[in-house]
Length: 80
Image (cartoon, rainbow, N blue to C red; front, side, top):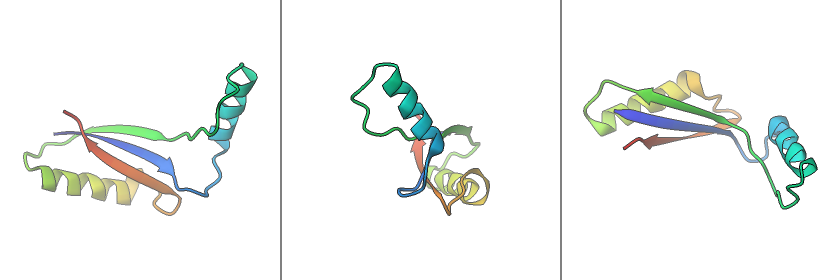
């Protein structure tokens, strides 16, 4: 079973990389940019047939290692 995990900074946490990207886009002529958030995208293929068990396992991975849950949020999506 394949999952995609999208990890982003929580609202209110300073995102210097997102700000640098936004500034680069604006100076490149893209004037209508409101906000840019930079994050991580992780794809995991797990050997588990049961969706609920697989998602719980991936969530444990995020909580323990993949995301810094103090400053980051994550969303787990099943790949079709």
